[in-house]
Image (cartoon, rainbow, N blue to C red; front, side, top):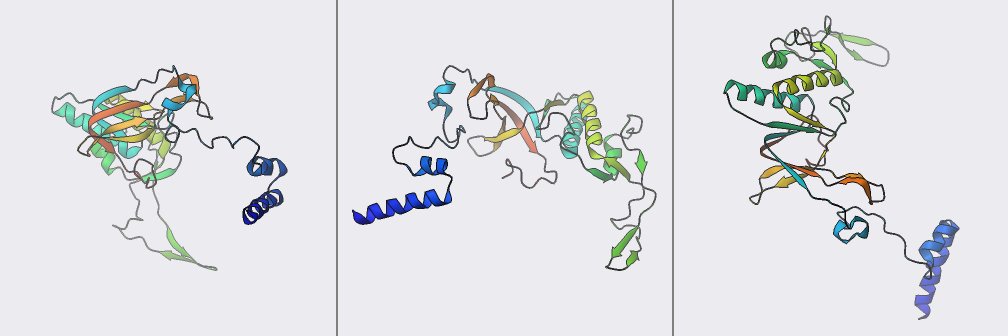
Length: 252
């Protein structure tokens, strides 16, 4: 009994020393009510058991498409465009849907880039007439090794990746927006503002689609008047195009 009392009193004194008085009182006092729940995330505290969600219509809407592309970057958009081009060449109906987490295409792509137009020539041979935002051709390359005191020039031979003659300097966000316009013109359905929050699987383990995140939720986890359940996009083929994004939650 004495050892239990000693340990308890020691813990209380440590709380009082290292924590503010109000915090120490909440954490160390045995008479105060328990500390509030740290998280109200539905994966930890199911909404079926949360009285704040009682009576809220959270019916999940499902949309079935032929091909689903997750990610509205250059690779995702060109994938969707090429699929529609091939379907058109074969006189086939193909519903291609693309979801992008940003509020509009290009919003999360802020970097500049050097583009080699070879693939663009194959995708749209008339890209200049279409108004592609490639306005700055590269006319000169310089490569050097910098030391503490000197700059050592290095010759750039034809065939080396540093040789950018014929390429273009672009703002990638503008290029992505232009690709989005071309994709919509050819019939690709684009849904910006919808992040794929979960990968959906068939019984055999194959991917059948993704679900987007719920909307209309307060920061404390309670529903707003505009609360809506996530939308599931199910497809015969689902493409998650990897565009230098090795830490995405869905990839993990």
